[in-house]
Length: 218
Image 1: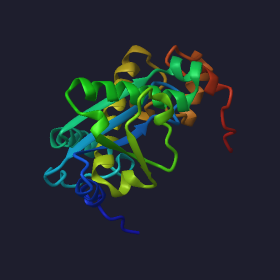
Image 2 (image 1 turned 180 degrees about the horizontal axis):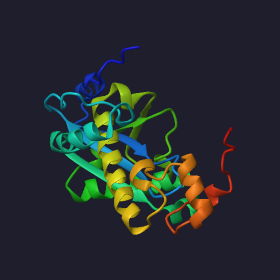
Image 3 (image 1 turned 90 degrees about the vertical axis):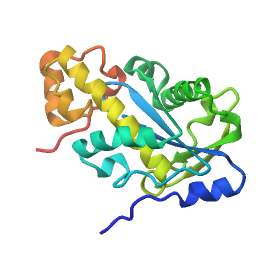
Image 4 (image 1 turned 90 degrees about the horizontal axis):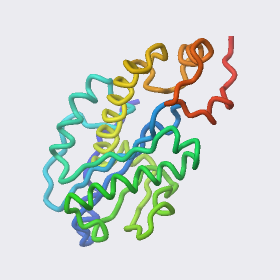
């Protein structure tokens, strides 16, 4: 089945409504058992040019292609940012609140870069607005299922956040060798769980998640 490339149709329709900036938003690392969760933003303003060729949801791209596209997506965006919430924070407050915390940190970065947050609209991938409850003065948020696939701003946010988090996990692999993070990026592969059994968990593991290990079929 062929999947169409993302477009700017929705973002430009929002621009025609009088919205100057559309903030594409996506998260990565939600299902990992180690490392932070990351929330990425890619901001597209009125008059923005065509998005980089080959841009897609990060899950549909190879690691090499994501690495190539991430700097192009950042350059194309009028603003971009990635916010993080640590494994310790995920353990302390849960994954949904941690997503909102990471999103708030990224929004703070955008605000400090000069983006008029409250004159913009956030286009959030999915059907659930997990961002608004974590903000004291939230901007407008619109959810859209498959926005990471269909909307160029959200696809760009996905790629930017994925590459940012992957690089952190590759660096962490050198500091905490044996877990295979350069390959699994903190997700729960069979080899990753075997390493935990052998080495014990590290301080970058989400400790509360390790008790919910899936049963692996022989």
